[in-house]
Length: 252
Image 1: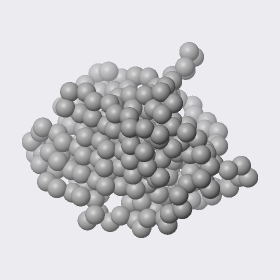
Image 2: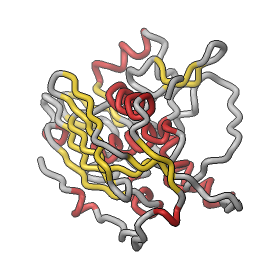
Image 3: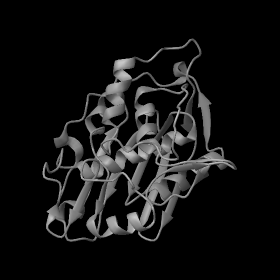
């Protein structure tokens, strides 16, 4: 968490020598598969955008396989409520025996599907597969600004949803009706994994983004608002059934 930096449209990690940008989609996939011991080699300052989602990582992780190791995994179990708010946005974390998310997005814009969407999500590999194909999105008027700032150099309709006043510009349309809140939830999962351990908490988020997510993680980390526990200390629960699109709580 202490290396989080430049949190605007992506999650970036910087130390004194190097910065690695846009790590959230990869981190989300690592979290879903419980991968906490891996070397990642990269030849650029930015993680490849691929198709704008975590779906390609799912395919590659399953193809390669994941090795179970002998040391018991440690979980970060939240001990107390932690919250961050800014203007009309907020995110809070409360103690729980699993990672569950109540995420709401609301944009004051012309496109009805962005005015309000809500998702209720419980973190598991199967549930993550349901949202892993959700792509990043932006507005058409932002694209030129990105280019001017030297951002999103590889960005195109092949790896992002672009929204204009007339609606979605992508010829293929949306992959799911709630793709916008699904992607915001995917981003949030990747940001939470920056803590360094799987987090056990109930997260309630309203209009959150990378900066607010990072502020929450920094606060949890700096205040040591969690305790490290091992699997046998967790309350035994059956793996939740995958949540269907109809159960996402879509409205609007």
